[in-house]
Length: 257
Image (cartoon, rainbow, N blue to C red; front, side, top):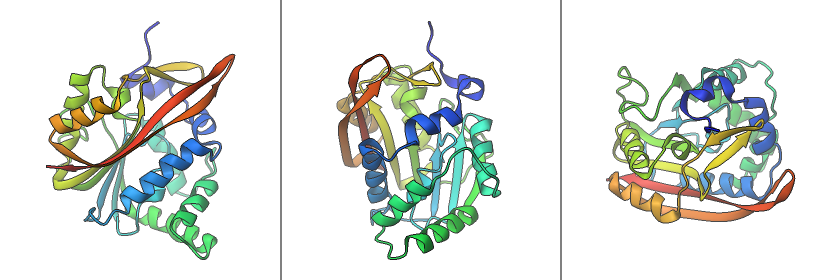
């Protein structure tokens, strides 16, 4: 059976199940992802205020970790339904997920003395700083379309490129496509999966390119990025009806050369 891929996210991806399965608890895996994302986004080498969350899905877990100096945030995804989930949250509507535990944990990372005050300020910051919600396709040379020409200071992308690419050559090309959106000397922060060929949401199997650490780093070099920081770790993941498996993830910070 062919794995789901590309435009299948528009009608076969369940945001509600994704939240439940991947963000329903703040376990070691999510602590690793959030902590390193927070550290890299707050790196003093990152400058400017324009940030793109590329392939954001229905989630806020990336932009929650952004410093307040990012006041020009764009969120982009291939699935309009995912963007609609974010739009409803921005408009104050109730969605089928509560981000409080992620907000509290990020507040602790930030050293907030008053977690409630920090959380309220962060929510206000996001609702004023997220300027656009746009559809995207990273397989296109212009992932945001021909009408978007503004060079960005930072692009953050989480588990997106490996899902979109079918080969290492295509993975490199997607990095080049993304690079076209970044200003010279700008930065790319990637979260991704290692040594996995698929993942499951709501009993549906979605494609993922199997990648090693060297695959990722070599691809970035081929796309004219310099890797500045790289963290990876394996986590045991319980799977229904079978033994737990090791799940490898990475978070990296790179600079466009």
